[in-house]
Image (cartoon, rainbow, N blue to C red; front, top):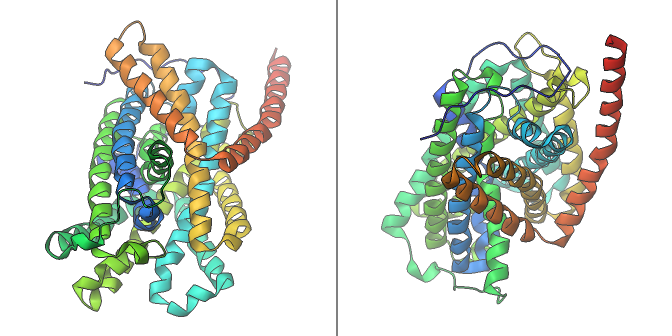
Length: 448
């Protein structure tokens, strides 16, 4: 059972107006977590994992257990506060403003990079509907930008509208996954199953790489804890929604990945830009079309939730005095429209900068960067729970310790290039934090 805690006092002196409308219940919170997790990750990962063969399921297993441990840690931390901001709040309460800022900064970077990756995945399946688009990179980029800004407009309309769209898309996106799982049980071909380790690499290295790749598919569990200020009875709703959502998604992901590998030859799967559509050919001529539409809805749902959270994070940082106050500016729909626009501008820029890598190459690099940027906050949150529970709740401390070790293992698997870029992006945030500290000091002096 998750203990309900007392809301800690903020260390902040800033006081922009926080969201006051409790618009999201259990199913909305569950949909925000599940809907953000089930998206571009599951619909592209069978192709990304194909070169690693059956050993990739070892990565899935480690990721499933590690993600549940992280979800439990986040749920435990969420039970101690009702403040909006999720992981940034937990880190700030445990380790101070600078750590809180760096967690918010790193996670925010991961969010808008993930927006670009999801938009690329959308284009991969959109190519099935418009085959001529597959050899037109410029038009592919325009489609990706179009979906980013359409869903940004939905979130700008307001929190309630974004939550409704998220719940509807979450339910719809389960249909193609369940169809493929069902098809594999009756028409799967064991001869298509790839060898254990076709890459020929060290099993430990392959496991580390596949843990990083599969972790991308489960990023999003934390989305259910971020908008606490808009959630009804957050200390009860958030823990249940996040843990149940993570278990649900882990089970569906492992089953659907296995199903695709049973339906598509390994050499075809490794180069596919729409693996679930290829797997659906056994359903007849209508199969790929139905699965493609389902995949597009799924990616849109994930992208919708991701854009929503990308706007919530700077707002939460501004409420705690860790970011400029204008980022907490709300419109009539209680949406942080300035933060939403900023996040989508940055996502659009990183999308255009990486399209020269090719669709699958760009997706793989961006998902690795996203995973690294979000694993670091997971690590800090697990340390925060370890600090809270070490003396008072040893069982929870063990869960937090496992979450720490898992996060470190996955970070190592991201590779040197991603770690260098991740370090550079984090360092860029330090001057911004220093500037905000000066602004807060001047404000405090003026009030004195």
